Each structure stands twice: as structure tokens, then as C-alpha cells.
Length: 277
Image: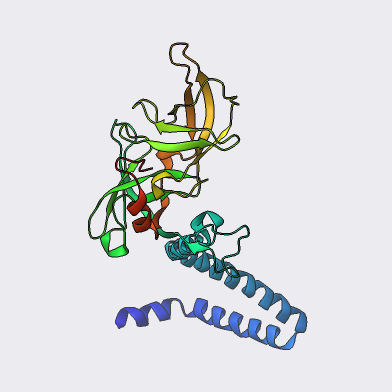
């Protein structure tokens, strides 16, 4: 207490000066329109800057919630795509036509762990059995096909990506409909291999490759990759085609798990040993 008193005594002149300054400024602002406008403009600028900074911080911490909302919206929009419906008519409108049956349901997920430099690569997502995820469900990104679910726990799932030596996807050239099996040779994560395309088929660099829909895992027409280069061995008569995947497996982040709502019907008529992808 004595220290406070001593401080006030020592700085009495300064304190009195500051009080008078504040008093004078108040009088000037209150009784002069020009100064009043300038004062409030200045304080508004400072206040606005502070609020803007606070708002930016709030937006940063709200990004996770926003991203989750966007992923759910994207999943809902994907379920309205024509490829997510079983087409039983010549026209398509999920809101107006009852003869289109919803076939694929999408669950957004986040990749929490992944590998790209092994022969049997994998990635783990933060959705599992409690979210309705099951083995053999397809996994895609906004760019295209990523892989297939292999193992599921209560809250997480393991996915076998296209860059896995055990992967094999029935793939068609979108331009002409010829199809073969897309696989991986265990080398570069930027190259896949398409086989079983006969040598008489015309190929173009950049040709789009899409899923055939075999096995009911992915919708027919889902983007897979692009033809990069090829060679035609005389002894086989079939192309060896190098494919650039649509998905960059080194940047996997947000994905969608696809549930085929008609999978049971497909399984009833699928021949033993039929294509699973």
C-alpha cells in the first residue's frame, strides 16, 4: 500500500496531465462533429482489425467442422450422380423417376496412415464397423478410384490401394470400351499397368481409363487413370500399357467409402471366381 502511495506522489504531475488530456479529448470529441467523426473512424479501424484477427483465429479452429460438413455434403451429392443409381430407364432424375434404384451410398473418411514405398502398400481410414464399413467396399477420392477395404475394426479400416501387388481392377478405355485388368508391378507409385488389350486397338496418350463396374465394387465409369505409354510385344499380341493413376497416393487425405446397396443381389448371380473389382 505504501508503495502505491509513493508511486502516486512521485508521478502526481504526470497523472494529472494524463487525466486533463483525457478530459480535453472527451470535450473536443463530444462537442465537435469533425473530431467526433475522426475519433470514431480511428477507433473503428482498430476495433475492426482486432475483431478481424479474432475472427480469423475462430475460422481456423472451425475449419475441421467445416471440412466435415463439406465432406458430408459431397457424399450426399455423389449419391445423386447417375453412376450411383441402377439405370432401368432411358432417362435419369433421382427426384422424378421411380424406376431408378439407388445403388451406392457414400461415407466420408479421413486417411490417418498410409504407405507408398512397399510392395504391399496400405492406408488406414478413421471409419470402421460402427460407421457401417465392411470389407470389399470400394474407396475413392474426388480424383478417382483409390482402393478397396480389406480389414475393419470398430473405428478404423485398412484399405488396399491400387499400388499394391495384389490389386487387380477391371478397367475400360472410356473412348472405345475395350477393357483389361489394371495391376501394379511394385515399382513406382506413379505408374500402373493395364494388360489384356489386344494389339489391333488404337491407343492415344492421355486416353481416360474408367472402372467397368465388375464385381459391383465401383460404379461403372468411375475415373481410374490415363494412358501414359505402351509397347506391343510380338510374342503376345497384347499391349503392355503404362497408366498414370488419377489419384496421387502420396497426397491421400479425404476419401469416400462406397457401399453397394444391391451387393447381395449381385452376389447371388456372380459366378464363382468372378471379378471382384
